[in-house]
Amino acid sequence: MNLDLLGYVAAVLTTVSFVPQALKTIRSRETGDISAWMYAILTTGTALWFLYGVAMNSWPIILANAVTFLLAATILAVKLRHG
Image 1: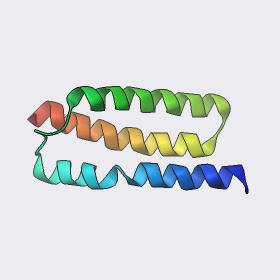
Image 2: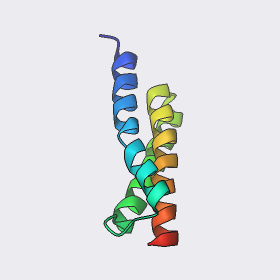
Image 3: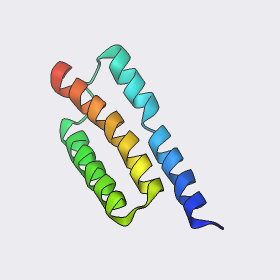
Image 4: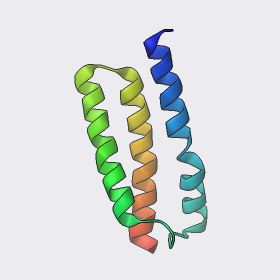
């Protein structure tokens, strides 16, 4: 199996998993059950994974973490603003 293909499939699945939560959070502004600390740590970790992907020139890691960072940061921003 092509390892890049494996990476892209994993990237799509883990990134897409954030879309429903992001959409629900943006639409409802309801963040009472969301942990700000968890999303702060996740957003920071995702940014570091993105930088790692850049350093390794690994497009599956770069793309997945760029999109996941935007989704997680959006959820965190709504939590901090409306939480």
